[in-house]
Image (cartoon, rainbow, N blue to C red; front, side):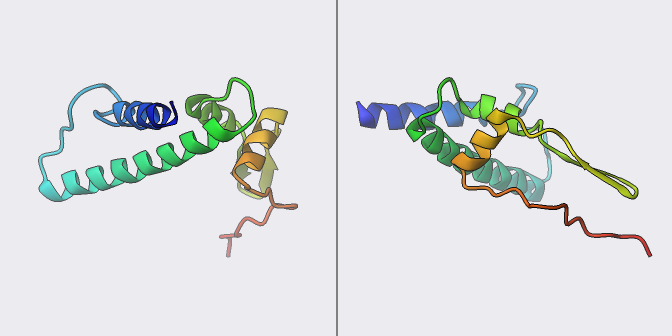
Length: 115
């Protein structure tokens, strides 16, 4: 059963990255760009498989890679000129960050580009 689950996880991850986001085949005519796109898709696939493995071994309920990415995307640092603000870090976002061992900085340390 474990080998079936592993195979199923890999197949599900590959299904997501077989085509472009709009469902069509790749449209780049330049071979260098096509190789670059393939490399990026391959890296995204490897990250997704790793995330799936972590999520499947976690003890959190109702957490898929898609849900996890949607929840994590709600946590942002907004930098508008001189004002730097964080969005609210919900309980679910804290669980996701802890699951992957990501530590939130105690204070904002955003590089200042003003001269």
